[in-house]
Image 1 (cartoon, protein in one colour):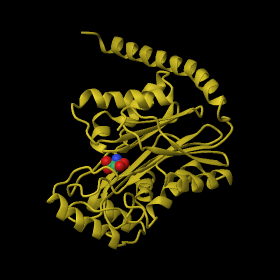
Image 2 (tube, protein in one colour; image 1 turned 180 degrees about the horizontal axis):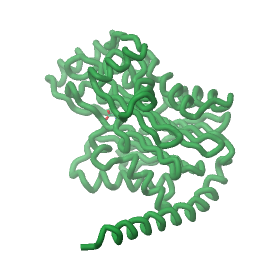
Image 3 (cartoon, helix red, strand yellow; image 1 turned 90 degrees about the vertical axis):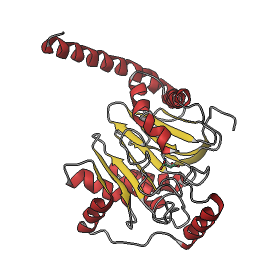
Length: 329
Ligand code: ASP
């Protein structure tokens, strides 16, 4: 049995060599990013086409000298409040019992984290997650406790289940005979990761989860390390798609750890997807998409299937891109 001291020394040596590797590979990453963006620019990266409006808001805050954490929070709040969004916020599709339950998380520039799961009746779950991070000794609150915490801090209750969502739910009940199953297109999370021009990182992730999920189901989006991960010394990653697959491989954390070892962001996203593929015999209709942002500003995206779009904002430019994918359909 190795002595405790020896064990500690070995651990420290291993950690030290990891740091050296990260420092060396950062040079490569800087060279890579120099081709497309300047590390002096603010960079915001987010999931799906609704990411564009989130990015614009986040960038507006960054460009006017605001804090990065405010930028990521206010960015995703735009989508949470959007009446057209059927997969984020209170206008999202309900679970199979007709309740809209929300999951969200946030990580700040120092790697602090806050998260809320299974929250009902609150328009901005990401802001509740932030308060949990800032005002409590905890990382995650759930359900009734989270709601009570939100109300105690001045949040107001609002009704979920918009007429549009109710209609979709009624139709789903007739069609499927009340079986919860991931339906392609009925779920899309906003995950937003950002790097300020001074090299800080932060991120936020928020969703109403899979449409018509089982009551009480929580996906990857509020799980630190699954739907979102930020390591201020390495980079950030976020996920969208069927959360169960992301949770099983700790998706976002895996990507950040790969970047720590020098794997470029896009390759890190692909490697994480490969872990999903080797573990599951059947992946019919399952979509998962990842985004990654290295602390140097290098970024990447990858999805299991076609269709995953991401919004990229660099300084004043905002663009929607199609992510590369592993399978043709
Ligand atoms: N990841 C989300 C969840 O599983 C859904 C999505 O992003 O499409 O709840």
